[in-house]
Image (cartoon, rainbow, N blue to C red; front, top):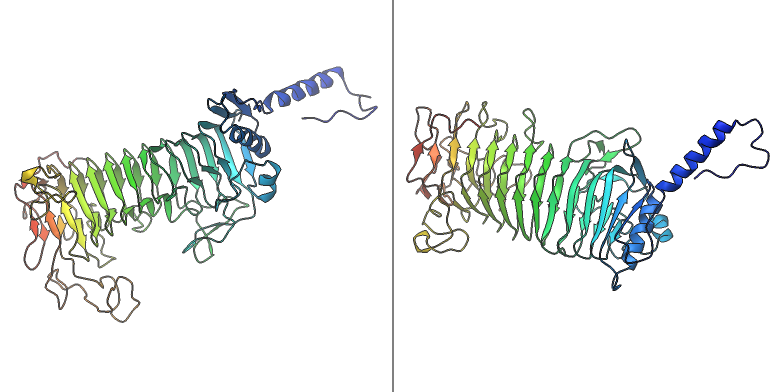
Length: 501
C-alpha cells in the first residue's frame, strides 16, 4: 500500500494524478488478505505475498478443534498475468507467523497445514524459492535445513493451481488421510518434486499435474548435482512414495530418471504419461517399485524410458492396459524377489532395436539377476500359481488373463522374454568396481545368452495367451537357457494392426 504523502507533496501534482494514486491505493487494499480469525469463515483470499499467505495458514491452523470450523479455502489473488511470489521459507519467516510452520518436521520452515479441510488455491501463481538453502540432489539425505514449499498434516487438505520452483524439498505429505494435490507444476526440481512420507496416511491423490526434469536453471539460480557440481535441475526423481497410499492420476512426468519411485505402501498409478529421450538412454530410467511396496498401474503411457517399469526387492506390481514403447533395455524389468502380474499391456521395441551400449539382459520382459523373480503375464507363473496370493490359477488364484501384445519389430536381436537370471556382474569390468556384483564373482554374458560358468538359471514366468509379432521368425522369442521356466502356451500371431500404437 502506498504511504501517505509528506506535507507539501501535493504542490505541482495534477488532480488526475491524485485520482490515479487513490485508485492504485484502493486496488492494493482490495488485494490484501481477507482471512480472519473467525473460525466460521469458509473462504478468504490473500495477495501475492509470503507474509499474507503465512498469516492465513496460521489462522486456519489456529482453528483446529474449534466447533465452528467447517474447513477453509484460501485463494491467492494472483492477478493476470499471474504473479510470482518470492518465498524465503526460513526461520525468520516462520517465527514472524507462529503456527504457520511445523518446527518438528525436517522441512522446518515450510508452510505447514495442520488443521483439517484447508484448501490452498494458488490462482496459477508461481512460488519461487529465494532462500539460502541450495537446490541440490544428494547421495543420501541432504543436510538441514531443507525447506519445502508446503507440508501436509491433518486430513483432507488440498494444494491446487500453482507452479513452484527451486524448493529443496518440494511438497511433502507427512501425516493424515485424504489429501489432494492437483494442477500443480514443478519444472525446476531439486531433490524430489513431491514426497509421500513413511508416516503418511491413505486415500491421498496427486492429479492433473506436470513434473519436468533435466531443465536448465534460470539466471540467478543454481541446481547442484550429487557431486555438488552445477547442472540441470531435476535429474533424479519426481515423486517419491515412502509409505501410505496415493492415487497418482492423469499427470505428465517427463525427462527425469525416475518419474515415480515407490518403496513402501500401496499406490495406484492411473493414466499418467512419461517420456524420456530418443537420443539419451539415461534421461528416463524407469518407474521404479522396490521393497515391500504394492503398486497398481493402469492405462499409463511410458515412452523412451530405459527399463520402462522396474520391479525390485519384494515389491508387487499389477500392471493392466499400459503402453510401453521404445524402451532402451526392457519394458518390464523384474529383479531380486520382485513380482509382476499384467494383462492387456502393449509393449513395443524401438525401431532401432534395443541398445547396444549396455551389455545387460534385454527384452520386452526381463527377469534380471535373481531366480526368485515371479512374473505372471498370463495363466500365473511358470507353475500356474498366482504371484499375488500363491493360489493355483485353476483354484481361484488372482492370475492374469494374458492379452498382452509383444511387438518386437525393431532392428537387431529381438527378445520378447529374457529369462536368464544368474548373471550378477553384467555391465561391469571383471576387475572393476563391485557395481551389480553380489559376491565378488564375475559372470559376463556369453554369446549364447547364458553366463560363463553358469547353468543359465531363470525365474518363474508365465506368459500364456498373448499375441506376438514374429515378422517371419519364431512366434515368441524367449531367451531361456538351461531348464526352461518360461511358459508361453496359447501364443498367437498379433493381428496386422495390433502393433499400431
